[in-house]
Amino acid sequence: MNTYTVTEDNNTTPSLLMQFFTDRVVLAIIAMLALLFVFDQPQVIPSITKTLGALWQMLPFFLLAIGFAAYAKASQADALIAKAFSGHPLRSTLLAALVGAISPFCSCGVIPLIAAMLGAGVPLAPVMAFWIASPIMDPEMFVITAAGIGFNFAVAKTLAAMAMGLFAGYSVLLIQRHGLLSSPLRNDFNSGCQSSCDSNSSPKVKWRFWQDASRVTAFTGESINIGVFLGKWLTLAFFLESLMIAYISSDWIVSYVGADNAFAIPIAAIVGAPSYLNGYAAIPLISGLLEIGMTPGAAMAFATAGAVSSVPAAIAVFALVKKPVFILYLILGLIGAMTSGWVFQVSGGTI
Image (cartoon, rainbow, N blue to C red; front, side, top):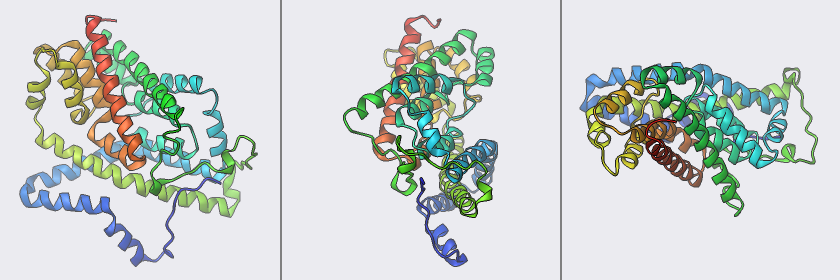
């Protein structure tokens, strides 16, 4: 059976509290709150409110993904999931990119689902393709983008999502042919695909896992483990997002990506990656930037780079995977965004 690393501490309240208050992520959140209270007390409540609001909006996706992962482990359906996505790598990666481009997940909302997929033993290539493509576009985003910026931009962004997903997935396949990236998950969130994922094994799947006490225990432990691990990192991510909204002015962004110059597209991708905070809220910002002189290619690079690798999303990814995978994720996102921007620019802002 696949197992996530779960720490046993005899279920004593003092030890649980000790673990909580000595956790580096929790300590980081507490330290930032303390600094904010000392240097900018009026910002404390808005940042807390923004963080809780973002977590509340993501809660349905979060719970769904956690339930999916815990159910897969308790029933041992994780082996079947892994096999379903472990067919021909080129086809599975293509399918993941296409599905990701129309899935209704934001850059942070997709994190628990990705954790569940990697935990189930799904190969990294299709996971990366889905991971990159999913946050860029979804049906609702398409409609709002078409209305706020333009139909051509919305269609081009959808095509960019698919192309970036394919580029990322096939890049991972190429790298893995050299024996790299074989174990993407961090050691403290490890879910090695063991015998149940062996193509020659026959896992005993029990869909009604609640009829088995040991499987119920596995379900509960898995839910708590994933929920706590990802919950603390996403809390940190959204808190940092609230600080960016408070202290980074849109005028600062305009000063770097609003001018029409030879470096507009790479600058837009680099600036947009950490500062693109919300796909829907960014639509009027991008529209305004286009009106004051931003090139269409720079706008596309800004939109796609930020959707993939904004600070909240990047922190969540950093918490989930090992550093080489995290660095590759950032590089693939930036290269894909800049390429999409250049292609859109060459096309004259049309498709």
